[in-house]
Length: 592
Ligand SMILES: Nc1ncnc2c1ncn2[C@@H]1O[C@H](COP(=O)(O)OP(=O)(O)OP(=O)(O)O)[C@@H](O)[C@H]1O
Ligand SMILES: [Mg+2]
Figure 1: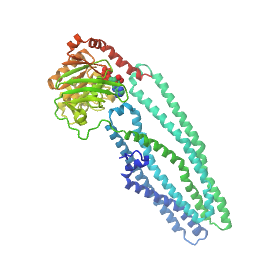
Figure 2: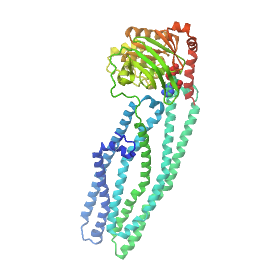
Figure 3: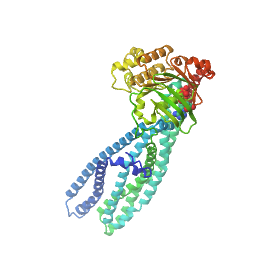
Figure 4: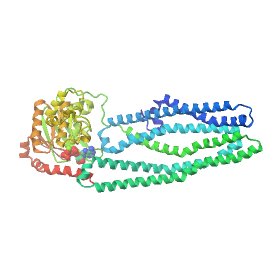
C-alpha cells in the first residue's frame, strides 16, 4: 500500500494509496475546478450586464439574469459533486491507511511491542492517519484556489491593467500575515494536540486503574493531577485564541481595504471615462477572490508540516520489519511426537543482558516437566522461545529434532499451547473466549474443555452460562476463574505440547490437582512444561529442573533434588517471598 522505498519523499511514498482512488479523485478535482470557474465567471457577466443592459441599454437584462442564475446552479451542483467525492476519497484513503497499519501491526514481532508504548500506537492509528487524510484532501483544493486565482487575474487584466495592479497591491500583506499566523499557530496547535493526548492518557489510566486508585484512596491526588493537565490544555487553548484574535481581524479587513482602493482608483478612471461602472463592480468581487489563496497559504503550510510529521510517524511503524518470519523453505510441523530440546541456548531481550546462557533441556515426548527457579530467572522466557515469540541468539530450540526456525510459525503455534501467567479475556461470551482458537468448535467440545479446566462448574452456575459476556478485561470473573477459562482455551486448541506458565497460581490447590488429573486422563502422551511457583504444582510433574543463572543447574525428581541439591531447597524456601516480591512492584508502579 505504501511505497516501501525509504529514500523517497513522504508524499511520493503515499502515492500508491491515492492511486487506488485516482478515478474518483480526478473526478472530484474536475468538478471542483468547474465550480470554481463558474464562480470566477459570475462577476464578469455581472459587469457585462451593468454596462450593456443598465448603463447603455443595448441588450436585454433577462439574458444576463438567466446566465448568472445558471452559473449559480452549475456552481452549486459541481460543488456538491466535488465535495461529496472528495470526502468519499478521503475516508477511503483513511480506511486504507488504517487497515494497512493494523495488518502490519499484526505481523510485527514481540520485540517491537517490547519497545513501543501502546498509547503511542493508538495515537498513530487515529490522529496521524486523520492528519494525513486531511492534507490529502485539502492540498489539492488549495491548488485549485490557486488556479481560480490565475483565472481571475487573467480576466481582470483583460478588463483593466492599472486597476488590476491596484487590486494586487494588498496581496503581499495578506500573504505575509497569513504565513505569520500559520507560523504562530503551528507550534501552538502541536502543543494542544500533545496536551489533549496527556489528558486522554490520564483518563485511560484512571479508568483502567480505578481499583488501585480507590484502594490507595488516591482519588484526590488523581483529580489534582488531572485538573493540572486540564489547566495546561486550557492555557494553551487561550494562547491559540489570542494569536488568532490578533491576526484574523486584520486578515479579514484586507479585502475591504482592497475594495476601497479599487473604488478610489476605479472611480477616478470611470469619471475620466476610461472605465465602466460594471468593471468597478466586477473588480470589487475579484479583489476578494484574489486574496483567498493568500489567506489560506499559512494554513496550508501548517497542514503540510503536520501531515509530513504524521506521515513520518506512520512510516516509522510501517518500515519496521517483523523479525520472526517464516523461512522461504520452512516446513509445516505435522502431527509431532512432542519431543522438546533446548540446545545450548543463549538469549537476551533486545540490547539487554542475556537471560539464558548455555541453557540445555531435553524433554522426551509425553513427559511433564516442572521448571522451577527464582523470580526473573527466565522461566517465562523459556516458554516464549518454545512458542517462537522470539528467536534465540545462539544455540537452538527443537521440536521433534527440527529447529523451530525451520518450521512455519503457524504450525509451531498450532502445536505449542502457551497458557500465560496473565490470562487475557476478550469482551465477548465465555463460549467465544474458550473457542478462541477454534471458533467452529461445537458446544459439547467447549463444555468438555471447560470441564477439564475445572471451569464448567462455575460457568453453569452463572445465569447466562456460556453466553455470559465478560466485562472489559474480564473483571466480572475472579483471577482463578479467568485462569481456568484461559486453560480451557488452550485445551480446546488441543496442542501436542502444552506450557502452563504459572497458569494455576490463583486456583485452589484441590481444583488444581483435579485439573491436572483430568488433563492427564484426557490427553495422555502430551508433552507438558509447568512453570511452578508452589509445591502443589511441582508435585504434579514427573521431573523437575532448576533454573539459575540462565541455565539448568539441577535435574531430577522432586525428592532427588530436595535430597541432593541445597539450591533447590533454598529456592523452595523462598517461593513465597518471591511471590510477594512479584506482586509488590507492579502495585507500586501504578500508584502515583
Ligand atoms: N519483554 C521483555 N523485555 C525485556 N526484558 C524482559 C522482557 N521480559 C522479561 N524480561 C527480563 O528477562 C528476565 C527473565 O524474565 P522472565 O519473565 O522469563 O522471568 P520468570 O522466570 O518467568 O519470572 P517470574 O517467576 O517472575 O514469572 C527478567 O530479568 C526480566 O526483567
Ligand atoms: Mg514468568
